[in-house]
Length: 511
Image (cartoon, rainbow, N blue to C red; front, side, top):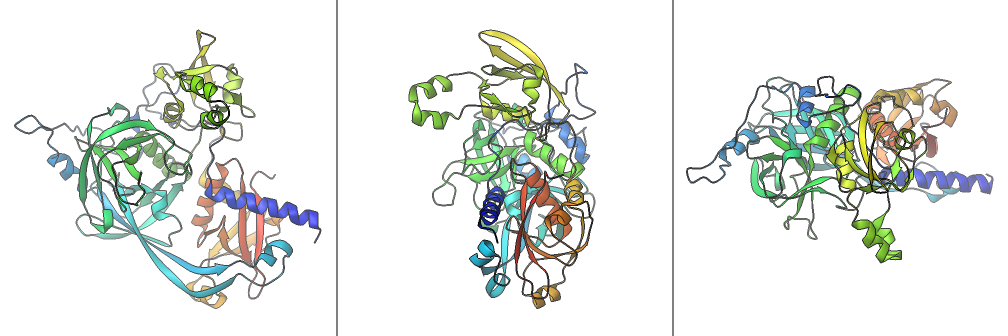
């Protein structure tokens, strides 16, 4: 093999692997939803009330919940807790793992056999929480709760158990949507997370340490909190609370004192892994939109404003005075534009300071994300900027990351691959010595698989280092990769019975 070609292949492989664990933090501006029943004072603009996401899941719009107080006038949490516990489920997952060693000769020179795997496949059990959001059994949870699971089951508060289907996942927001079969399930009504106030009482409901139906109370410590965790989430606009949240609470409900769902508990800030006073939830204004997109399209519609903003932390290392000056700006400074930028096309210029979206004040990037997260490509929004001390407004038609206004569906990615797939039976997996796998049963000449050299009979074990066991797994990974800057998937597989393992990069942008 030519050494230059080998180096190029290694670069693509490394980039693809990195893209499977690092989400996009670069050019910014994300999504929002235009609903046909939205309140629109101007037909040229897309306006959304956060409570309207509930309509996607046929929640009863006539339900009116009220705050209760004790005889002494203190907040009464009993009714809110009673309304919540039946709508929060215990999520249990199974996944298969085995110790593996990837032969470096396979990567460097294409030699060697299949991955050298040792030890028996081990079944791993995981647990978390979820929130029922519709009578017919749709459930919101965290992506990290169900990631790589081969089986997902849920237990209700009345001890009924169901096998759940993973409808879709979104790694950038850490939200996943599940579905159980049945009807007349108890569900939580969406509340208005925008209306939350710092200092307001909230309840966290979930299953910490496998203790089902646990309710804790606290106050909202902050809103639109960013720079949380390891930076792996592309969406950073959290509700920070001091209600006790621990392992197993992930995917559970954050509710207000009415018992309305205002957030999905996602992470804690802790050096020990247990609660130490800081917990973070994805606001329902974001989680509800993500769930609605997953239900309707199979993937999240990310609407891009197409701007880049200064990285203040990086600037602080070089020029503390400049960083201090930038941190005082009330708004978001436009430093540059992406290719085919929606903002640039509308007339926004470098140096403009974004101060409002549809008349909602914007003071920092987290608040900009919080607003933009509700829109889809093709939606039109009013962007107010400060240009050299003068206020100006622009109507911006938001685009997707391809620079157009098309809506992407989860099935589009699989169609782009140009192949049909079949699940590999448990017995065949055992015979082949693999713990995961999907068989390619046909390939179209015009598809990306054919162009990449993948043909009928190929067994896909992993994509972007995540195990795949059915077409749904492939669709979710392709859809997630399609939202990133580097749209390359790395496929690991082989031709049975004794073919060597191949690592094949597929560029999803290739025509």
